[in-house]
Length: 454
Ligand code: 4AD
Image (cartoon, rainbow, N blue to C red; front, side, top):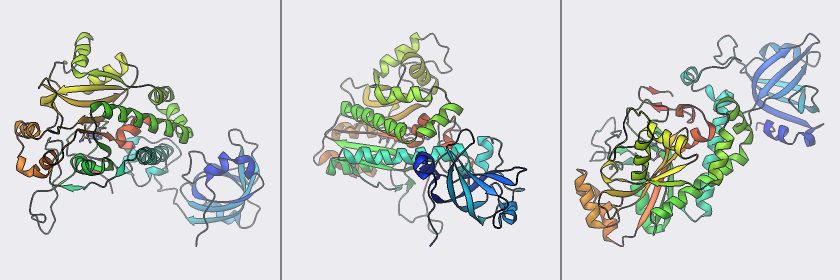
């Protein structure tokens, strides 16, 4: 069995108690600098944190002279040595190597990652190596922390985790932006048209109407031809669904949820957030603090349109009642009008999907979109139409075939209750938390029109 190393993160966090101790570290060489005095300084990163651990290699020792030529950027190593107080600035400790094993060598001439900073475009072309960079490594640790915080939040509040299907027969959002699924050898495999899911909502509703409070958290797929910095063809969505709940309950849940996740990440990923604020957005921590503490501003869609009209801004898409909110509108509302997250509620019925509850005015639905600065819409949710006749009417209005959704209509026939939920795009949330400019850097392997790697 291979011996587990001590994470560099542990050594650097609790450095005082490690002084004088013998440790083993398993990682990859970032850089090596040789001094004339017969000593090399090797920076090793093991992926547990942003910082490298400096290893001192005394050429006079053991077989170190021979090993030296293989101790190149990218090589994987297992090093045993003693932790010492470091005289160098910017690091409390270093390791004096006693034994070094080159686990996998790395040809420096062909290794694509160099010490200089690479562009994100270049790194996407080497998506198998980019996790070894500081930014992608840090983003993925944040992604891990968020995912864990999501489960903690819902589990502590009595929600059941439901695994909704990836292959479905429905198009939840009704936008026709679906990927068809067929078997290579048999196009009629399921006997009916099937798609990759665009949202687990409809199936989550089924379970909410039996278990009370549920959530689903999994990959979703959209065949949208959107080449923007906030769209992916495959993204992960967090979708809670609650029975005996209305739009107000939904808003309160979304707010508690954002508070919880943002505060968790702020306490668990301090080093990463400091790094992001240095490189991407100097106001990042301030913005996160506001979200962690402040309640959402809530405005109706009608009020939002009137604010946009009165703004005097020259929008590319002029704001008119009935239009969908564009990125420029969201930006204006989150950055100029409200200094923090804003929930826009009660959208026109015509621009929202069939499942949303029709309000008494007959023109709007009990929907909510939560917008944040820098990213725009991060959450989309609603109270669901729980009245059979009205749901049927909505389906017909949207040109759907009610027979295909008989099971969904049944929920309104057999013990229907008001219920509500929302969907939050994990990658947009990570974009918001890290300030990375493009959503493609928030997912291990991005899929967008014209591009899929590995
Ligand atoms: O507003 P959307 O389309 O809502 C739904 O899918 C509902 N069925 C959710 C529900 O009520 N259970 O998407 C919800 C969120 C958006 O606010 C956004 O964060 C994210 O999913 N999202 C995307 N993220 C990345 N790339 C895309 N193409 C996205 N489309 C939506």
